Length: 465
Image 1 (cartoon, rainbow, N blue to C red):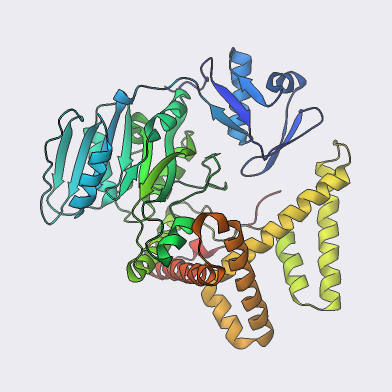
Image 2: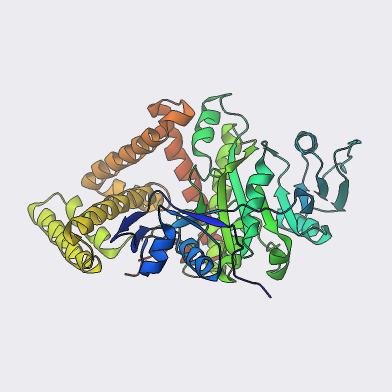
């Protein structure tokens, strides 16, 4: 039986992106975005944006803030690192394994050799913890290897580390604190580049790796900004994973997404903790890089079969799509229709904020943010998930060709501008890699859909009001 109560001393801090109104009684933000109404007593407990759990009442308020996504945890207690077993799934990467083992200090490790051509041999590691090797005589896949290590471990927590990663100092302690919340099942670090600048592709991957989920801490929600965390590096509550059957061994790709969504559906909480860093040896040879991106794309269709309605390349409100299409006609009546659509959406949104001061201004701000964010999601989907459809339309229409080229360049340049301080790659090469990245993933998406004979992974999602 799980207990939901947060322990005394546990703190929560309102996310800096959340906006407070009416003396802190109404909070707008989170992921997915929402408006949270608090009782005056609850708002008073939060004070300057920080709440410490001291009794059952403050524990209830803290839990609601966390579950609404408007606050982030600030735990003060953490389990002992001795309660962690490191599980390393391995297939034909002995050099990477030795590099990883050299970075681990005092941890008990289980290496699961998943049918490598040469059985792994572990050199003596005096004073660095015990290393146990399990071997599959034939490759069963990374999910099966992780499950074997999960079952063999006897500690309360298991850290899964792929053989091509190297954890940075303090990675474990930063994540362990989250488990003072008894409802947290899984925490993931930020995955950064091991090789940052050996060539142009390495600099692009340092900036835009599929495994790097960014600098902002977040709860992990299927419909949120961070919808899953990659299995290259995870820290998990062993009992929680065992209760949900561990990783799905029938899946060779996207098994991490499936695990996150099953844990969430079962009522567990998941966190992304970017203060913890684990470096990953990204693929920086073009052919291997392209193949990996394509491989990632093939995972959407199997996910669509397991989680109907959860896998969608595009989630945009109907009014955003309608207004965008009307403006895209570049005609007088199209622009007029787009404005009417936005005004209608503004009137409806104003009703939501009616109890706030100056609801029209607040509604206009959030309408503008939502509209422009929706345009970029449409553009991204056009270049990535639906690029075959876009290509067909470009070949059939000169007007669409000009619009598509403009939006593809604008999307790439905006993405470069957002990440310009981290990669050092010029905009021309960055945009070129971004477009090839999208084509590779989108090709894998369509290939997976064809193999699965299911279009579930291509269906757009229309958020509810």
